[in-house]
Image 1: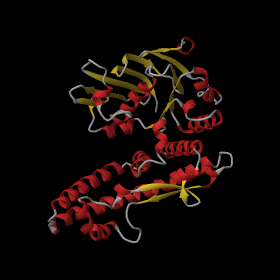
Image 2: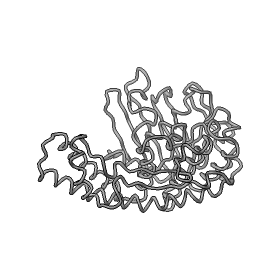
Image 3: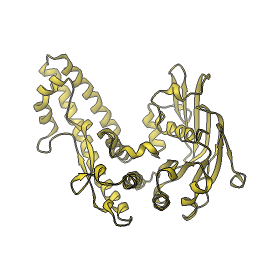
Image 4: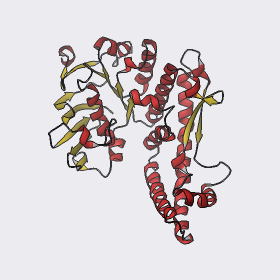
Length: 368
């Protein structure tokens, strides 16, 4: 799936824009602060309901305006729309009908984001890496979203009981039963896709020149001891959980570890190698989802600032195999377009847009 038309209103410094996007690579060039990243941010909001730069909707709305709107037409025939108002309210629509949640947007528009924050996966907290796996599982296993929701409900209820101090056995037993049931299902769904993801990452790293990246191992930690089932683990940890006031084990504590010869990859790999590892993981996620028939859209923010020329070319080659469309930003058009122009059609004919002071215009030759 791909975006064919994108409309923005009052999104950061972009007053308005109505863009017809190309099916392959769309390059947005301009000086720093011109609005390039804001455009990617708007597309991200269409797929998730939120910005990737701020959790506060008000900070994304253009100053002195009542609210923002983002609207897109997809080549699948779907229309997606998000409205955020300065008073904190808003609407999400799919084909002009109110959406039940932002997950409905995500299912319509699988999206991969590569920006400077993406490269924090190795040294960030477990939640950062856990979300990488969950994105993959969400787009492959349709039962996952509901099971994860059920787990979160039970988790909140158990935590509320733990904070009371005096535990009613019957009450907490009910929620631990639900927590264990949904938690085991979540874990099983994650395990199945982790195996696929691990294989895909290994294959991509195998295409790189021989280096420490060839020795990277991935492992999945489910969030509680392997020797026991979740129901037993919850019962065993109840007393210590009461003292802490929250549930300290379960799928919400899961993690993916990246190691080299048993040591954390973050401590062994160079910064450039870490970035290529993250690119391989993100691409592998897209490949796993692509096997189900959904080719994601990639948002790539200023790749020349993150990777050298040879690694840019490798990454572009990877993305060209599993993406439906790419929106990429950069300061210089030639440098930003170069990795893509060396690929086969349709990737080698980027549609170029120029961004200046929040105004976006298609390059004349590309518009024809």
